Image 1 (tube, rainbow, N blue to C red):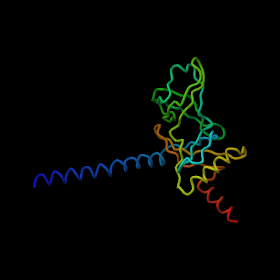
Image 2: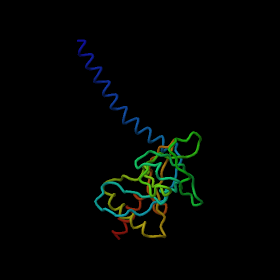
Image 3: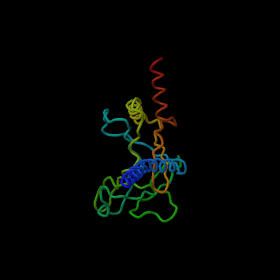
Image 4: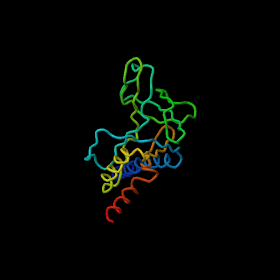
Length: 194
């Protein structure tokens, strides 16, 4: 009888852990979305494009490069802290980059070094953690096409809306001229039906 109680107790403990872990992940993302600071990151065209990418849009950002003094001190894949500010148009721009976590209240996001050009001085290219926007499968391909078209049209403003809290980021939406890409897909479908 004792063995049966132990087995049931272990089973219940494992079941609770399996519920706790995803719940904690969801709660953490929701907290960032609710209490985080929103930043608008201008997107840039992807090269080369791949129409068979999947249920998400790959995003590239206009402001993902910063000048550094020495490329020797930075390694590809290394975690970094990107200090952010906004420009006159309200879009996020890089203020500075550091290997040290900030101790003051400066807004920042955790990212990784994509690569560095030049050894003595050059550019550090940042790999943001929010470079994929997952969508409903039936809309993903059309959204990717709309996003690519908007990147080629200089009159359109395309950006990612990202919530950031304590360095953690959650991609909320991708917008084209202030319209959610999901809504843009629906409007595009309605125009085709006419």
